[in-house]
Picture 1 (tube, rainbow, N blue to C red):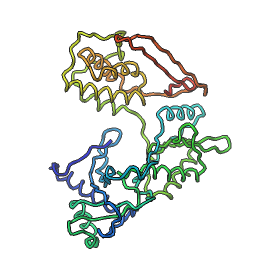
Picture 2: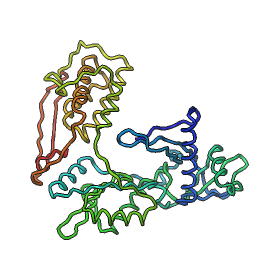
Picture 3: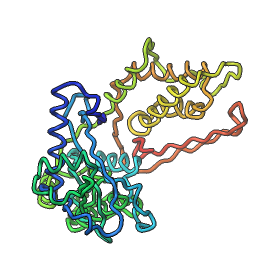
Picture 4: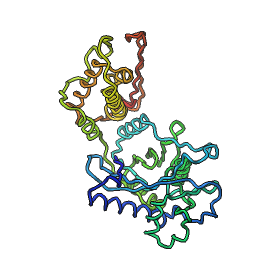
Length: 388
């Protein structure tokens, strides 16, 4: 989790010092640590030089505690011509793939799970294709020259520093695709193959053992034994400059942060009553500001329900249909659901499969809503464990 900072309005001396340190570390990583760019003279730029900027954020741990201040330089990719990069998208692992793999691992008794986080993944990826140039604004140029005085000779008469990208800078339209292709090539070399269903699920079979990797951009979830995890640690460390392999999985802090914005919330033993689908057309509409807050909370609940709390899916599914026309009655239903989470925030999703049989429950109700719309529901279980 991260919070964007604005040093122009920051007054805390310690925070300003942390921002300065983060900016210098990013510049050093950029020019020296990863050799992601090289300075060029303005006259040597071929074609257009795209703008860029640096921002800093506070990084927090999953439990909400402050971790560090992080700086990042980002290219203005919106200035690039998208027609030059027709194949620029990259996938991320589907949520139901994660649950299916974790359930299969639980069934086979695999208890070792690790997460690989490749730091600066994009700027560890070499650029391909026509050269791409960036133009550092005057503020960033001054900061760079302060760290590397010898680059002053490259600064233009207008005070800009021009650079050619050697690595896939964040913001480049092709960066995620280049990184994904590099990662897949590396994992195939390590004996892993892609799933034909989800390209972000990689599998390696050794004797009767099956190891799984789940890819979400630069985060890789490893489901394997200790020996394979340590082997991957060594190989990733050799291939990439910086990685971390710590893992914490729960969404309790997410719930607590969401509930902080709600005052005078009473606990509830159930997420909804039998009238959840009943709409009182006489109930007054919420003021626009409250309606937007209603919409925000429902969206956060949807994210939660898809990952860790499927028990709120039915109630929140209905509330999702009310975000554009929320009423006082809808707000009461939302607060009942939030009250249920307040009472059960420590509840976690556990996967205890009995076998690997896939079972789907599908049902539909015709014209069940007040506006004559129908309602459909589906749930998939793998060995009795809910995965979708």
